[in-house]
Image 1 (cartoon, rainbow over the protein chains, first blue to last red):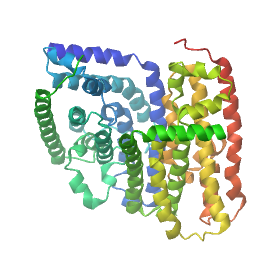
Image 2 (image 1 turned 120 degrees about the vertical axis):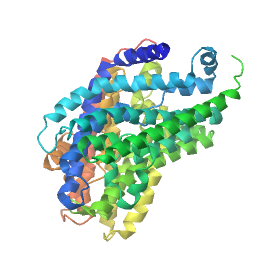
Image 3 (image 1 turned 90 degrees about the horizontal axis):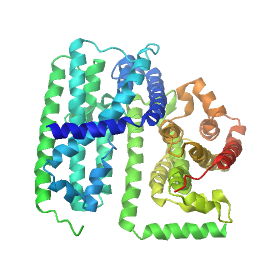
Image 4 (image 1 turned 120 degrees about the horizontal axis):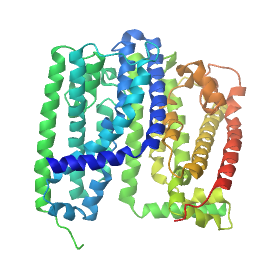
Length: 267
Length: 258
């Protein structure tokens, strides 16, 4: 456990170095958040009755999304990992006495968390003080807040476990561009990163809500804004556990199988 | 111009050497743009209209935006990745060559896979043009073409601004993303839906409305003012401050030394 913590630590401190990038990043995300809210407000003014949640809930959802963007960015792959597979450097990592799956997992987590820590607070603070209904509202209850925190961590874990599958596929394809793009399309769209899932057509929502992608950011944010309440919150939590278990299990088995037949040429 | 064509065919041939990888990236660009379209489609099926604009009108805006953006992205790729050109010392080599520097950067990279978005735009236009209620007279066709040309000019200008700022920062600026990717994402709807303030900002600060909102009003017949139709020509003036900024940045440039 200790060695993974130190991997985590190295990456975390490393990513904290990029403070200037964080500042411009925060400004960018603010502008993005404001424009998104204005866009939804145009739809809200056109036809409020078709809006699947209150406008303030939507605004809170968007600000949460911007604050925790770094945790849920689907397009972020550890380039080190991809390169180590395609260049063969993975051989060095294999001789170390560590579990490679855990190492990749912690590294990815550390990178995301460091970025999110730098960015989330300024965004949350300013968003809270924006005029109603454009602000980030507090969660409906303490229970919801605690569940939000828990589900955010689980959601990030699911995303990393899924992107791990994409990384492992590199063992077979060398250039995994195609796999990555298809993954990005589904992960980005079905997780509700472009438009929140409640805005999808009603008939396909029930199906999408069961996919692993919907367990990433959709569940924590909707719990936070009070769009998922009561027993449904715990159902969401259960769904997250199930998908996390499945995706990690597949990833581990697949990695084990790939490593058995990996041939590193030359050196 | 002759030389440009030479570079053009050189890049084209180069990228065609890796056909599989090329078409894969092209496809990736296409589905990236497709998710943006799908989001628009879902929103429009739920609400039917946005600020009085119908689905058919909105997709014309979406397609022209996508069209001009992908052309600018394809041919101005050198500016888009300017921080790399500076960092690897390629820019220093360009400076000692007896040829226009902007020309050299433009020809250093032409990324045809970016045209995946263009394919998307063409498909949507092919659907939108016959199904819209616009009567396609010569002036409407000209308006549409001018909108696309104007958009290409604005986006190219933004890439030049981006590169000029790289002289100071020596690294890429995430901030500019708002004006390229952001403009593409939010500019798929007529700018007026974001409110009057945004129309003003995007007329006087960065003039997106010149090729998007105003000529669009004329195109769909919401305005009879034919002056709106030729407004995209005005985008050419946007290039002046871009060029000046570039010149100032260039003067300030000191090599990174690598």
